[in-house]
Image 1 (cartoon, rainbow, N blue to C red):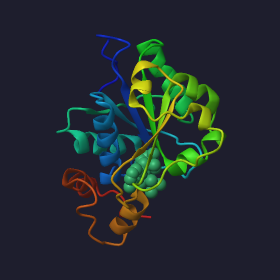
Image 2: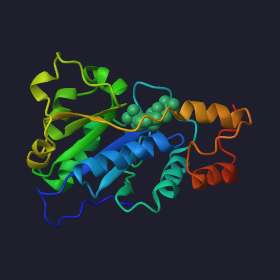
Image 3: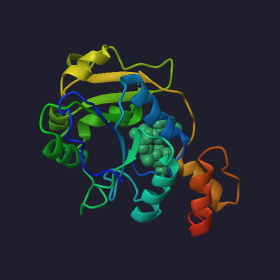
Length: 220
Ligand code: ATP
């Protein structure tokens, strides 16, 4: 588990961040994390499970189980790292607090790339301290191929189409990235598990094995 930022060469290495409930983690999350990392050449992509996510129902599996599933899912992929900082904090898992804790470790120069789906981005202006989030990190808005961000709106002054803009500045740009469309959701996986349908090939076998061993998602 990675909790500390490697202090070598600060300011030149980007850190990618993908938060979520990961209840359970599936191939939609994993492809997104990997494709963002690959697109920018990021060797340190953090997957951060939220403890008490705001704006949505609370997770079904415990924080410990969600972290363990994440760890087995990414065990063989060197650029993906499980980061448990939100699980160690009490109260709501505000992204602002998470990014501030990164800044406390990295200083102000290192580029942070905060990844979120287009659905989440549409409500970004309702997020706790959203303007301050843009002071702390870049936003990478991921969406299915063929879509793009609307050509007008509040985000336009921040929009960048050049990955180098995000490499050479620590925060404040919004970048739109098409990733492989996988119509998989944790909600659908939980329903499958609860109703005895086979969820194989929607999530790693190692995660499914963990779910079965611990009898997760089979109750109400
Ligand atoms: P739930 O169905 O419980 O709401 P979820 O499958 O949407 O869960 P989250 O943990 O809420 O998963 O998502 C974490 C992040 O991963 C979000 O930024 C979300 O946009 C993104 N994400 C979720 N599913 C996919 C997918 N199939 N493809 C790409 N990105 C995804």
